Image (cartoon, rainbow, N blue to C red; front, side, top):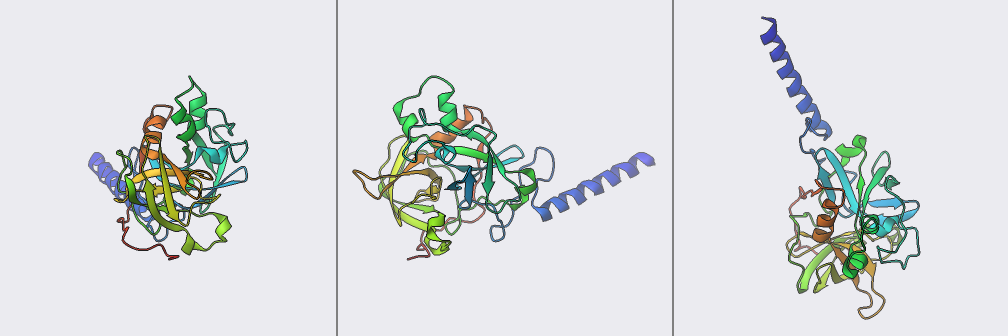
Length: 280
């Protein structure tokens, strides 16, 4: 009789562990997908501020690989050169393993991937990659995984990944969180239009434009799909516009350069692009 009793006790223990995991927002068992915190109470999500050796940027999307949880920003956020350094094949960067402070987390995350470092580790890529592949990934500490939700504040989504580019005048959406806005959250949601796209970049105009500290922000297309990572503010030709690195290509590059299982986490909140930004 001991074996059946042991099996029943083991089953009851498994049920209890699953219930506890659902309450705390952690993965339920080995190999299972993360269980996200409710969007309304999550403290770690796209749009939070991230600080790398004092440099400030905005988180874009949440990613997973197995049980591990990551949050993305721009590779130049870990750069050590001038603010005008935009060529990732030449610019200096902090190394992998660098701690990154994440607003809402109890302990720093860890820089585990940088497109700049990846591009510098082998043969020099084409110019488009050097100039526009601006994407980095920070692993969230296991103790903080239960505080994460992948939804974009205000807009919801992402609903998937844009793989076809954005058309000229297509509506786009973003959420910046620069401290230069002095914590006025009404100015964080932004909408605007794409100026068309090339394979590796989406030039966009938004109200208001991205400013220092917004770097790394998510850019969604008109269907709420992840389209870009806010990278640079244009000062010439299209003054006041921003360039956004193509996140689909950047993710594919990361998967083939050290992050093979990295996957975009979809938002738990439905995308709603019909609402106006809070500040308008």
